[in-house]
Amino acid sequence: MAGLHAPPTVLVAGHVCLDLTPALDGSPSLEPGRLVEVGPAASAAGGAVGNTGVALHRLGVAVRLIGKVGDDVFGRSLRDTLEREGPGLADGLVVAAGQVTSYSIVISPPGVDRSFLHCPGANDAFVADDVRAADLEGALLLHFGYPPLMPAMYADDGSELRAMFAAAQAVGVATSLDVSRPDPGTAAGRADWARILERTLPFVDVFLPSADELRFMLGAAGSAVDRALLRSLGGRLIDMGVAVAVIKLGDQGLYVRTASGERLRAFCERLALEPGAWEGRELLSPCFRPRRVAGTTGCGDCTIAGFLAALVRGEGPVDAATAATAVGACSVEAAHGTDGVAPWPQIAARVAQRWQRSPVAIELGPADERREDASGTLTFTTP
Image (cartoon, rainbow, N blue to C red; front, side, top):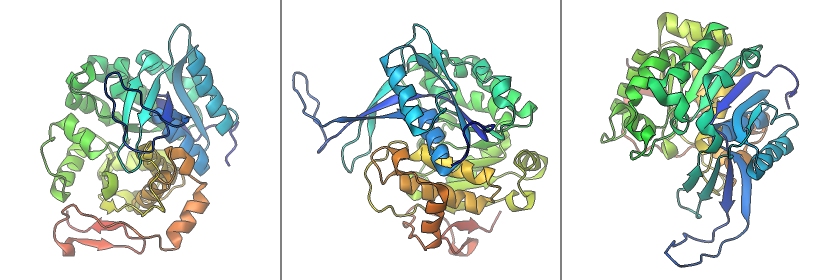
């Protein structure tokens, strides 16, 4: 495991919370006045910082986690949880006096997608200056997660979000962004996310939303997901300024589209990547079949961790997408996503042993417009 006291390779900043997941035998029926008996509650670090950050640590990447917690019992529990995961992992958390720590109650019945009861807590107070210049020193990449759950970061058309990423790129640090789907009835849901992304994405090298999040933010919520939509959405993100658009597709895998020209070369230079391998690519990595599905909490964040870990290893887009879907499959084999993530050599060995992929059900267009490599990743061959 990479040394925690060496300069971090990846900074993971943004939303952090304590996840409390009660054990459930089936789908609970929550009715007024009724007591529902459940099993013991598992606690884990959650949010983008807890999920992507811990997954990167488990994969062997040196990380620094940056987030805000309160000076309350949940804050102490969250810091203790991270310290048990690895000495020093909680060092980057800011304890905000008088604030409450964010927490989620995760309702995750067997075989059913999870839902959440969430308190944002101290995340509301996170601002660009919480990622300090000293944090950026020696880092290769800054990853930020869940600005829709952090009001100060999306206020004023995302001025704080834009400023944070601009500061990182100004000192040569690569940048990546993950989002969450806002509740339409909240202030986050009413924010102009297309405008926020237009202002922010020129300073984001890699943007990794889910298809549902992206359709909501760009106003394509009614469209069926197929290759035509993915090409359109990916192309729009590149036009907005990203170098690499990565769209998470749930059980359909991961779609990747990359830019060309100077924008792509600048991204590759920051991470010492080979531009020829990354320029003008379009591919889809189907999901690997897990041994079992114990839970989906944190799966998307772990998928992102797999992609980012491949970037800092210097790999190309096919290997990065393959790594992402492999780590995502491992994550669902445990009730909490990061518990299923092993050191990268162990996961790579599963891939090398012809780990079976799941079939892709979405429409991908004519078969002669794509090719499949030995690992099962699909590369599209037409512009």
